[in-house]
Length: 282
Image (cartoon, rainbow, N blue to C red; front, side):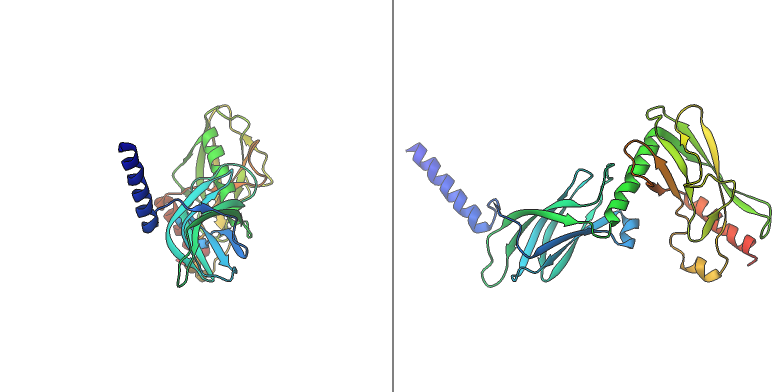
């Protein structure tokens, strides 16, 4: 009798869960006509987010309550409740990515058809294309930063200005690389200028500079810059003028991979304060 009572109780609990919609979703094939893309907006480059865009051409309205992104370079997750009619972007926090190739990933969604009689919840896995390579570039930046910062401790020193006036002054930012000896095959391959600042001739510049291996004694290299333009509206509209790329080489690092040299607010302020004196706005 006790066994029968236990079985009956189990059936009642299962029925209650089904009525509440808490049963496990059924695995099904990826819906025909549903397309997934991976991307990142310019604003999300600052917030550290990315998104999956689902485009629904299935002929039915659908709702998504969970989304998981999985590749050999990163994993991420979104939960909530959103319709995909005809499309929807699902934002997620982008974790630090691993070295590798490409930004495509697999996407697993928990979904159901909606309408007068909502369908059962299902789970399906399909491909998500990084069609503009924005996620790939983001992952390459993570790879470059992770690789170089594991190979060396990097310290950005106090900025200074040498000389005065246009044609006679230069902004100098010393950067010290102290190898950890954990990855002596990793190299610093030079900096890259921005839309607002160009690199002076004495600066290690990618791709013309010989790579500096991260081994041996600490070495201090100078990021020496000049304004690339002096029109005031360029400064007013600028959003990326202080994002100097740090190029990195290594066994698992994609060719040309780089990340942005992290600058403090004070270092950025000094950089922008250099413009008026050089350009003659004062």
